[in-house]
Length: 143
Image (cartoon, rainbow, N blue to C red; front, top):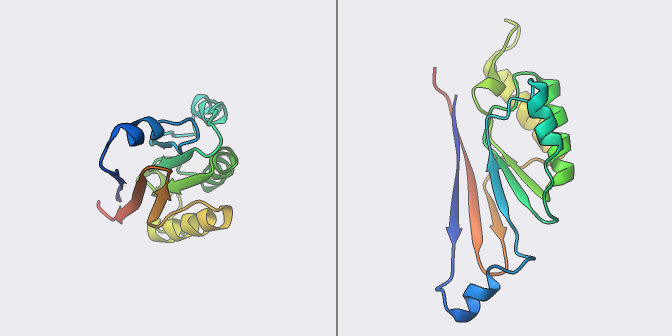
């Protein structure tokens, strides 16, 4: 599974007034993380200790866990901390340990889980005061 997220920032032509206002404290901030592997308890503690400001948004670019219940717990935790969470699964998220489930079936379960919790998995435009950003999850398979 190849994954990635593209974030394109649209900025206005900079002038003196837009330069000062684009850094105001109430401007939305966008963060990106990947490979958090919360199966390791140290990594889960790190996620629990994240302290975003109100309005902050987060991109999670794959490799949360290969266990569905850990992915769910992480989604729920991040959704409480960030105003918007965008997600694209990585190869570890789609590992299957039992032959009764394919990685495609697991992918579908993760997408339903994300939708239920309010995690964004489709193209999203984030609008700030002076700029906007398009976040587009890229999802494709590889072996």
